[in-house]
Length: 192
Image (cartoon, rainbow, N blue to C red; front, side, top):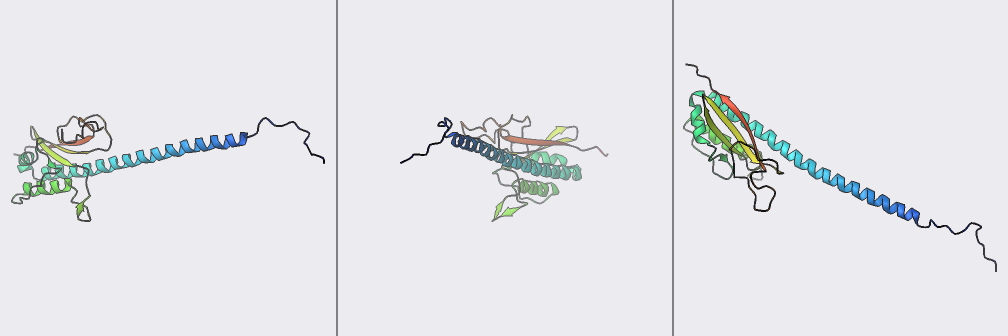
């Protein structure tokens, strides 16, 4: 019986292709995890951008309402002070005797998302939208819209909604770090 042996010595590199495949799988897995993390971050950024766009629409809406009802501008500030902002979980005003009352009630409902509904629930606004109007003197009114952001950043300076967006102890959103606020100043000229 004759055994056929190759003339080359035994190879010391047996199994290297298996190691190469394992390294490739590890690199691919790390890349896929990175893509999954990027996708999650993109969804959060998209939600933040959507909420900011909705807040800008509502901010401009109330600024326009105040500017067109200039003779009663001070009554808007009394209806939505920074200490008790409109929106959130509070009931919206329902009085419609004056244009200001109608404007404030409609704005409050818009802050709660009443502009778009799904299954009987309001879905057309920011998370926890609140609005404030402050008389800052000299015929100027500071209109603010606050909402709940998705990720913590530094706490904004405007007082609208301050202390209303804190999560439970130990969560990332304590100390108003998830509160977002945009503001604009409406100037009412004296035409008399």
